[in-house]
Image (cartoon, rainbow, N blue to C red):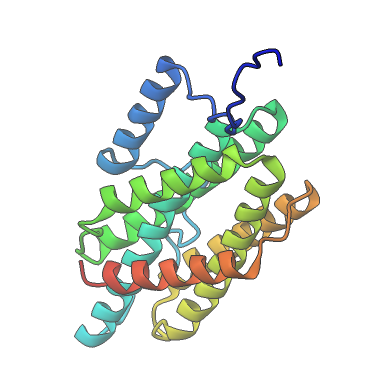
Length: 225
């Protein structure tokens, strides 16, 4: 019998890594998100004409915890959408994720301004949150645009639910935080609907439950640390 070359199993191809200039660009974005003062492209919804807050100490601490969590959410949004844009091969989808990241950057600036007004600091774990969200976004992006859009749609759905909860927990006198969160909620709804309109896959239930569990861990820690 003729000798036959041994057959080796075929392994799936590894995802193509970004070019070094793209990696350096993401490092620059990460440093700006985590260390620089964010600047919004749109006016702060709280404006300058809303009444000055009349918060007692307990209410103030409650608002600080809520706004710190929302600030962390915007840190994660920057990392998530920038990673998804980096991983996508479709210029149209890259533009979609980039646009979402820019609107989320407004949210980051607004929540930072509110924390400053309250004399509070952001979460000390922000580098950890950013790194984790970036990794998740890049993995989702390498699975294809429909999966990545599905991840975006589910993320925005959960963020909308989370913002509804925060709006219900804000003290009645805190009109500034309320105005910010209401505009954020409207933007998140639009981002989620855009992802669906662009053909987002519906994620499996175990993935949705895992995302919910990770969100609970983040919100619990971010309020205090």
